[in-house]
Length: 251
Image 1 (tube, helix red, strand yellow):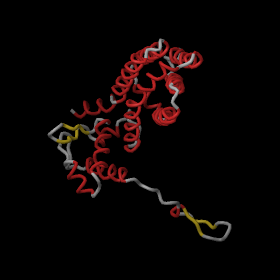
Image 2 (cartoon, rainbow, N blue to C red):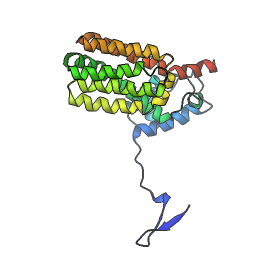
Image 3 (tube, helix red, strand yellow):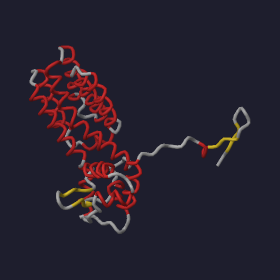
Image 4 (cartoon, rainbow, N blue to C red):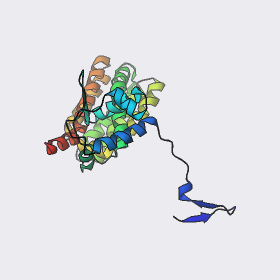
């Protein structure tokens, strides 16, 4: 490892970089990943209970529950009420799939961002339907037209997709929700190359956005809420497609 001296004559090196702080959940993820990738845990196996995992890892049950929830969203485990949690997809096979370019931790972060979006954005759409000005409606519509004009260019389509949603956020009239949702959307769309690649039909995605815009334009808050929920459900279905293909390959 190369070292050098700084201006004061002190020897420095890459190994003396600042210590990275690792959260409890990240440590739980790392341990579970190793556990699930071991030869002793096969697809279909029942995992130890939350209480048992918490005891084994010496952490609180909320941390275990949060990580298992994220794994559930990713399609790696499935919880059966009154029975337990089962491994339904191999992490190794899932992450080695060419369509799945994210790291394990990035996948968990993405799953949590998507969950937050599903909870928050329908409410934002409902508020925008009540509060959007003519200028704000014009901005939303401009990005909708941009999506339509980019059906053959997935990169440009995604750019207009993000701006469409950010324009709705701006129109909701709530600064706290604006800040929250801007973080969530930008975090999700940072992985845009993967997200847009998973969409099987951009025309269908465009039509979902059209339904959202028409509801907001007509100041129909209930319809705007339901149209956004519909969009979230389709997006979730499209973005678990790679995981589903991996499980089918293993069958």
